[in-house]
Image (tube, rainbow, N blue to C red; front, side, top):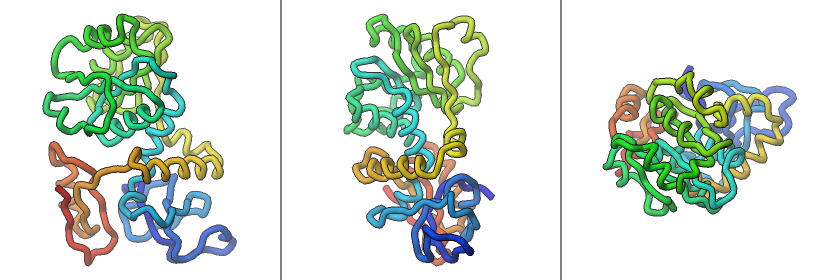
Length: 275
């Protein structure tokens, strides 16, 4: 069953459950199955949701926010280092940028099309915006870094764009590779071409399934606070009842969609679209 994130209310608990109770809102982490109205999971994977968070924000408070939080926490350099973030108009790209801004860093934003500039929030503090469909990406990055190269680049694209980011790193610089939107892997030649570059493949599940419960809870506490202040909040494009899953998937595939598409387990709820 698909669906790795969502928020739910506990309907019943088994023998031996001591920290959670019926009626409590929780995030069930660690497994798929959110696209259904009931899910059975272990107590250790259920984390209480603060009462001040809406169901919508709680449902989106796991994968993108935690991934962005982990990647910035682990790899962000000290300012005024030069860094870049591609897929900058994506939800997670903008979260990474906002978290870098909180750390005093103004990243270079990489977007795919010129009209993508309209999708970047005015509240983002950027040193520059580069359209990757235009030529000269490496030259532009070199100029913006004063010829020193990038300290860190966050890559959700891969392919030639990811390759160019690796080649644009300063000696000892880091590429945080966490997505493959291009569908093309990084070049196998990069290890030979850029022996001083550090390429880190980030996968949230690697940490989720090795972290202790108190570590996960501490991370979620930080993320809930970032959701509250807007740093890790997500836009909602539309909400559909589970019975309209086909329409929800069609909406999800709409080009230029702004915000997340959510499923509600209440079949009585009508579809809601947000401008």
